[in-house]
Image (cartoon, rainbow, N blue to C red):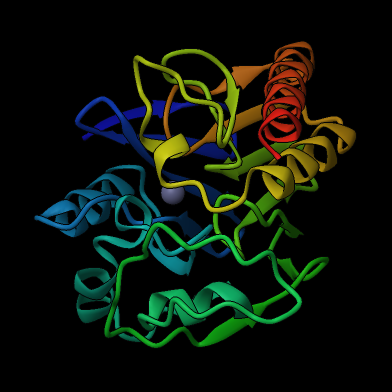
Length: 242
Ligand SMILES: [Zn+2]
């Protein structure tokens, strides 16, 4: 695992050059955001936290896809007292439930990753966990959440955006790294969530796939325009067909 300090509070841990999780420094230890892939990453994450000199005191999950919750069970086995938080909506996905609510768009979910770990906390828009504020960003999954560090406006956006292969809103296919787009649930909601994240005026954008961007707003804005144009094209095509 490669470790990079992105700010005083934020450390990016990267597996296989493509899958990120984050250690956020708080007064009482590290908050781990996402848990990478299965297969031995739990040990690697704990070792890196150790080297940085603080214990992992809580685990937050942006959403229940394999590359974000893959090592959750192994981490929970090793750190059974550490609280685990996910959105109430994606807790269902984490438990293997792919059903949709009647009020939600009925697009089929491309799949989640089932864990035996039961979250200890189900979080919602506006909740505070240490310095981090929960931002509901549905689209990539129904219960996807991002976290805004209120100390310096660092935004940990999960898969709402990617920067690997180019900056993109989830749902826009980047040929060099199409995974987030292929596992996206609902494009219109992804676009809405991307606009919401831009409006937070983040100083730093940390994503599930790709490097951390400083002063990310112009790049986020461009990615939003690309997504808007592509959705408008799809809509025109549909009109043509019907
Ligand atoms: Zn994902």
